[in-house]
Amino acid sequence: MIERDDEKLRQTIAANIVYYRKQCNLTQDELAEMIYYSGKSVSKWERGEGVPDIYVLVMLAEIFGVTVNDLICEKHRKHRRAQPQLKRSIITLMSLGLVWLVATLTYFFLRVAAPQLSGAWLAFIVAVPVTFIVATVFTSLWHPKLLRFICISGIVWSTAMALHVIFRIENMFLIYVVAGILQLLIVLWYLLENTELFAGIAPKKRKMRRLDSSEAASEPIDGGEAAEKTDNEEE
Image (cartoon, rainbow, N blue to C red; front, side, top):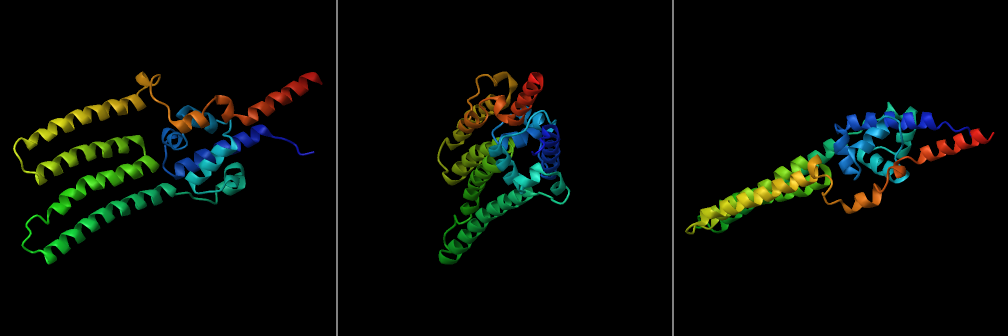
């Protein structure tokens, strides 16, 4: 018979999650957000009071850039260094740089093809809100909510600025009033998602409902431990 050691397995997984999370420069809340769990669940796993289910282990392994075996086996932990966050940051910066490359090429071709055109420089003005749009996409995928909040705010104000510069019409400055109202709504949305005061009414993500339906789902081993205690009592 294979001897079970649930406590040792929990502690090994806990140590591995802590190790790889720190290697990726992630906080518990940031990691929790990426797997659609709460920071409380991650903290519980890292204390060895429970373990994530296999689906979550697969997600964690993907985030850390390791295998599931690395998460459950102690012997692999010290020989791996996971830095997917650095790669994702580089990909984000490259994408933002691509926006400005396109803007520069647009300006160049306009100046060459139509040298009499005086508005070629507006390509750089348009590139500002486009930059924030691209940044919003990548921050929604890989980065903390605060960066997404900043990027969405950047979309609002840079779009207002671009419209004001491009369309020089009377009273166009009022576009900043509209931007201010939108900014207020964005702030309220951010508070709704992140402030404890509104936690009870914040809309839950679809994946959160699927993954984090109960605390029991994150503690598959505890059920086995309870069964062992029952068997011991019967003996």
